[in-house]
Length: 495
Image (tube, helix red, strand yellow):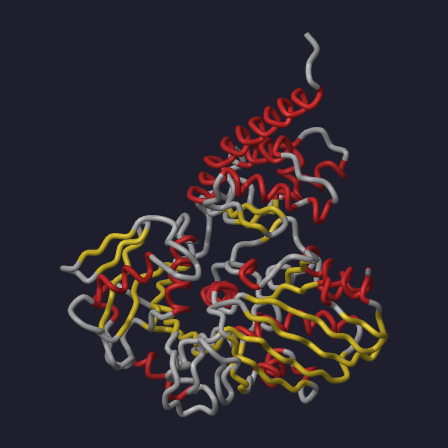
């Protein structure tokens, strides 16, 4: 009997797929063990492998082709993981793709010896982690507060990090606790909570994947005694936006058990506006109140930073096409802000944005060089910033795209900047992106010194990820990265 070539190829493809599935299944307990027992976070070119499914792990390996031109074989990362669990590692963030590439380039044949050399600072350091858990209180539980809760629960790991202890809200009625839990469990934009949630109505506690979240009812941030709930030296994250200056936010510091405050909005006055990846190193122990700027500021500042480093920015205009927010009216009604009283679901609403000016707080070299405006549009999430820039040094579309792609993959800003060049992507494709902003390379327009860039951003989840990074810096719980990344300035000089 003659075999059908097409049928034979199909059988081989299926067998290969099954083999890859088997290897991905074998990786899951190893990734989990490293995370829970050693506080080791594993990733592939910045894509976290923690709590991922078999298919997600396979997709992460396929993503590597965008950097290395070939898919990363699971047959090479599985031995890495098997070896890593034997090294008694201390807390670290490990990029398996880069470790694998380094091993192949080294010419060595002993994988364990290579890893011991590369990770010498954390080998046999299990249990020697000097980091301590930091209690976190979310003051407010709206769109950003609930997403922060999801991320913090996901990151709970081995316990050395940010420990979500409580949320503070104003009581909304007899069924308040159940409704809060339901809103955490179900989200119309970001989908269901990945795990299980139970409610202890007697003690006002929401249990989410083993994390006990005390629900505290209060209308005044200055009168809560957090120590009554066993909460000490807490970092309070104010998600309400009700107070934006030092005087208002200082009320949190009057409560027992609070040591520092982070605002999830642009701050006023002399408060530091932090965009992680840009000026997070300016946070010092004396800073009791810090702000995480806005979603738009976080999306555009990293891109503007790397462009200014290489080409110089003379001036520019930032136009944001922004999804509507809870601040707007669903139907036409009175609103103290101009135009925002008109129906958010039916209109494009022209409004102002302070993001262009706010960039200068994180990136002083761009002070006075940017203007900005915003158009609110009838979508619930994901926005776009259009950067219309005049440069000191001219460039081409291909050159600037190659540079930005490299920054998204090989610089210390790769957690902030992403790059895509698909001709079919639309806004919903970026829901859940953990990057601050994603450059749409196909839309880039460059005519020598005039450059127009289109930057997508998940103004809810991507921003929340940036907020958590700032929290980690304030708490001093960010793990060391291996292999070390080059600085943006060094990479820029090589391009």
